[in-house]
Length: 432
Image 1 (cartoon, rainbow, N blue to C red):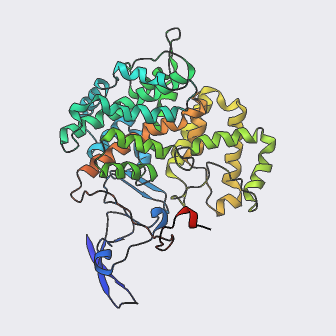
Image 2 (cartoon, rainbow, N blue to C red):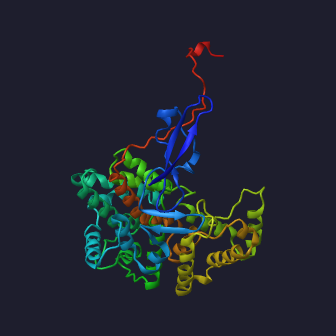
Image 3 (spheres, one colour):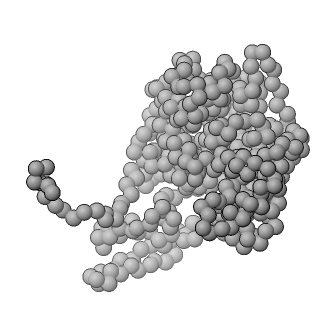
C-alpha cells in the first residue's frame, strides 16, 4: 500500500520525480526508485544493499532493533517451543500451518523422497577422503538436477512443489553422506520409520556394527536448532538463491549457489569460528586475556559469536537456543568438557560486562549452535553443513515465492564505475 510519495530532485538539471512510498505489514516504509534511471538518468549506490529492498516477500520478517523474528507471521519463540522442523517447512512453503491431514501427507511425501539415486552415492568417491564437507555438499546438491529431468520445468507449479519436497527430503541424506565419506564409513540409508531429525542422526552415527539410539533431548534440541536456522529474510545466501533463480537456473543449482554463499566465514561459517576461538583460548585462565584483546581497538582479534549485523537487541533465536543448549549439556554430561566450560564462562562474562552490554554484543545464535553441535559430537567441519540443511527449507520457499511473483525479472544490480577513462590501445613495443 502506498500512502505518500517522496520527491527526488536533481539540483544540477532541475529535473525531479515523484517516488511512491510503499508500506509493508511491518518494518520501515520503502521508497520505490524503479523509474529513477528512466526519469532522471541516475542509479542508487548502496554498497552491501544495507538500505535496499530487493523484493516483496511474505515469508519471513525480522526487526533487528526490537529483536523480532517471525515466519509467515508466527513468532520464532512459539514455533521453536511448540512446532517441529517439518511443520515449519510446510509453513514456509505454503504460507499457513497445516491441519493434521495436511501434515501427515506432507511428512509422508518427505519420507517418500528421502533417498537418492544409487549412482549419486558413487559421486562422493570422486572427492578426497578429507575434502571439506561443504565442498562436497555444493557438488552433490547441484548434481541432483541431472537425475530429475522430467520434473524441472520451473514454470510448472506441480514440478516446483515436487522439487521443493525433494530438496527438503534429500538434504539430510546428502549431508549425512558428506560426514560418512570423511570418516570412511559406509553410507546409511534413510529409515522411513524414524522422524526427520532422528533419521538424520541415525544416518550420521549408526553403522553396520553399531546401533545408534539418539536421546530424546538431543533430537528435540537439534530440531529446535533447525527451526531457528530455517529462514532469515534476505540474507546473503537467500539473496544468492533468488538471484540465481531470477536467471531461470534450475532449483537444485540455486540451492547449490546458496550453499556456496553460506560457506562464507561471515555467514554460515560463524559457528565454526566460535569453536576455533574457544580452542584458541584453551583454558578458563586465558579468558580474561582474550576479553581484554577484544576490547583493545588496536588488536584485530574479536570474539566470535557475539553481536549481529541486523540484531541490535538480543538475537531472539539465541534466547531460545540458550536454554536448549544448557539442557543438552546437563543431559549429556558435556558440562565437564573443557571447551564447553570455557564457553559458559565466556557467556557469563559477556552478559555482565558493561563493555559488551553497552555495545549490545550479546551471545548470538552462532555461539550457542556451535556449542550444541560440539556436544552432539558433530565435527566442526560439519557445522555449516547442518546450517545448510536447515536453511534449505527457507531457500526453496523463497525460490517458490520468486517464481510466483508477478513482477518476476532477472536480477541486474548496477554499479558506480570508478575505473580508467577511455584510452587507445598501443602496441607492446611502444609502451614505456
